[in-house]
Length: 230
Image 1 (cartoon, rainbow, N blue to C red):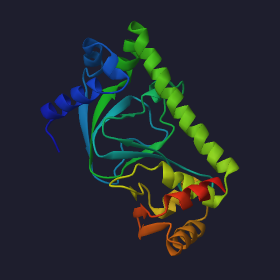
Image 2 (image 1 turned 180 degrees about the horizontal axis):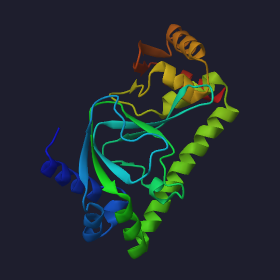
Image 3 (image 1 turned 90 degrees about the vertical axis):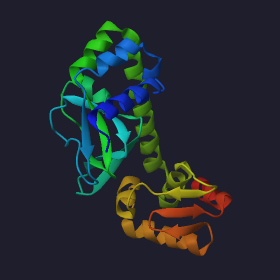
Image 4 (image 1 turned 180 degrees about the vertical axis):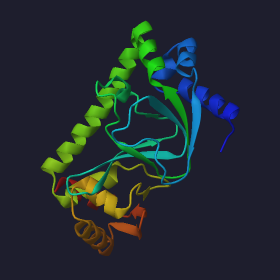
């Protein structure tokens, strides 16, 4: 992990290259970094827990943070993956409850820049374009959740899994990496773990997928797309 000085230098660079905040004046970005500190986490550690006072938001400098909630059935559901250069909980800073609505867990060793709630709220009051950026971020998050609800409500299990796999970023052709364990993925998709395992095994036998655990290759992209449509 980096020292504090290098970490804050990286935070400035990532804020400057952020698709929304990068367009804001440098002085405003510096005001957001006032009294910022670094937060280093090992895999499995929490940044914050659901229900804790929402005093800070974060910029991920290294690694990845998963946000999660527990369902009525006790199953853990991963809501979002927040990676390098992305913001964690900025919209929460404007919620009236002033509590984090989700918990968090580091998916790998991670380094975050911890930013103060009041600095963000003050900056939005003094610079309305920043407030519009926060609304853009909130809108993107809402749109993503609506897509998730549509997938759960209107798709059967094969459609949900195929659609999820097709949306994952691909490396070196059709190679994909599952960011979740198969049990977590089953909970996210609203299917039984046994159903998920059966589908993966079936698609392997059919030559649609190759791999195991979290490392897979889409061998027949047209067949997987057909599963998503069927």
